[in-house]
Length: 500
Image (cartoon, rainbow, N blue to C red):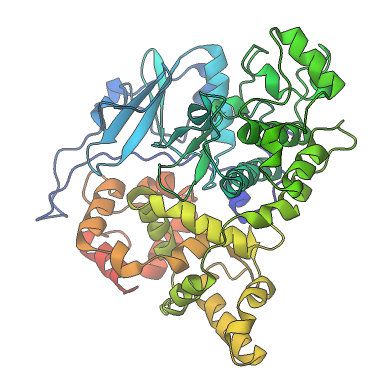
């Protein structure tokens, strides 16, 4: 299997061969005249970057410039936010969105990292999104989600303080498992996930997290005094140390859960070899007072994970464990009310624009909505079926027939691709507050971000934003616009306001 292939059965895997979502804002339009053509941001031809030969072919569909991100982003002070030495906090000059810019030297190792990242565009709310890529003479710059809550490890500096309740820990570990389940479905493993690998989206009481260590998926670090605690027993020999599989990620989840409950990892030592010795002995302790403060189910789940590989449970069995029922459930009635308000049928092109707007303008809501989606997704396959929704909502109707009729109406609107199931992208679009999103300001901002330098929407430009083939976009334009070769702001505004 090649580096760009995947065994995923998710709808999102359909686009694995498409280029990673790279936004190329190349113009500024005024709010008073959104169709006004202004000087383009696009640099002269001689300034276009030439990546190394090894990655030039893979990056051929990306519009890469020979300048850093500073043309589109401004660096801002990070305050109390702890960032790595290669990270800077930046703000988009057009949208005002705050992101993190990660800087990587242009060497062969990072060339391979960028190549692999393009082969596996990660599109999951539990994983930080890579919004853009810039390349100059010396560096790669990845523009990524900003998680203002910081790394989980920041909350465990003092080992004597446990900052989260058991229910909060269950929620966090479950979200971590969701991200690893998605990686498994897309043929990827991490192998060293720990509290440094995940960051809180914000500091609210929702306790939403994202996998923020993207590079670790493609460039495996050498064993050191920081990551040795995540090593499973089967990888404690030199021969097997660099064998990465999904069971290794499950082990890491058990280590994380133990550390979040106790304040320290289950296997400790003063040297790498002493830690490995404890791991091979399975010397974790469960009779300490910290485990007296949590449920028996919690301890039992960890004990089903921190075992030899042949006895270790799968990621799916881990997620289906009874302990996770302690997580705070969302209000199903609010979801029902939002779905009931979704009356207007959405075209595929409208869905693409709505998804882009949600991700780039009101991305903070995605995490909470994904939690609600997962609560409905009984078998955790990333698709909602009519039967799954019926199980949740059948008792809210006078009869089963009435519930079925309601669900049929939901699918007529939300199942845009007519597959018979609803994926998260379709769910996100269906449940989003359209009047709140499709304001004049948001529409103008979106148009500025996706329009070409002539002030028009073109399929050539949009295919990079949407990771959709030009031929498919050509057909969508023909289906939605009377003059697909001349689509300005007024036509775009009319298309989107049909949803109100």
